[in-house]
Image (cartoon, rainbow, N blue to C red; front, side):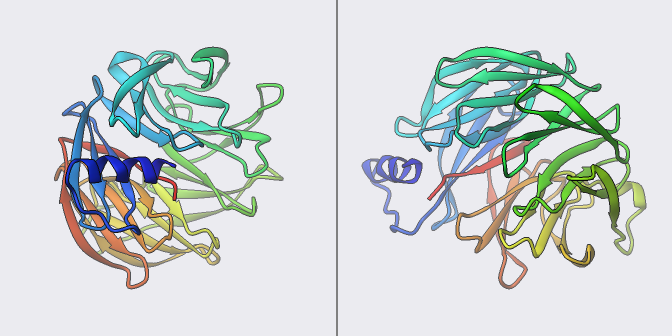
Length: 322
């Protein structure tokens, strides 16, 4: 639905878009906008003002809205995909950063960095329905494939909190390396990956036993260890390959997700932060904050094929569902 609505808008504006194009949305933290990218022409087709300091971004499950965490406005803005403009807001705690939805798309879990809580929002009713106290500076959020466990990473506490979605209580805390930024499950629930920006690692956790089972480490010739800062991550649907954004190292690490060994480093833009696959997984797009652009990686060849200029300090990226 989102793809159809977005393409209809582009066609109405006189833009020719082939039927197999996908649409990406990029939050620009400094210019307070969202850039809309057509992945067939690799061009920005629209720039949408959204409010002060947008970061986390994602689609509602029905594809009708793009949600944007607008940190300095303490709210979640809702972009109507058909109208390509902000039409509503969701209530949030102070300084929302990242969020995740439940499988049905009814509840939104939001990490509020400034008050150490995860806020729970009923999307349809546009109301807050609960909150969970977590560690200091919560950021990363992901939900288990069965929907039973919510994971939150707290940057200063250096923990991954396991939250029971039924009781809304923390049921386990797993210590990880310094300043955890992002978390992601393998689709088969066999592993949870947590990136540590200052620790310079990705911690592998067994989500059933809730124990650390390994670490992914990075080394790039000519770069100091402290310049390698893992942040955003993406895993292929088959669980065989992982991609890790390494911040000011300006690289994306390609990881064999079975052996946890790095197989390649891809040079992208400056201060690579978040990433998203196109729905067919042919391409991986990364946001590069300092160079104000998006890099396009051909997943099959593992080569960077395009750079797209967006707004100032691009942070998050979301891809329209097919």
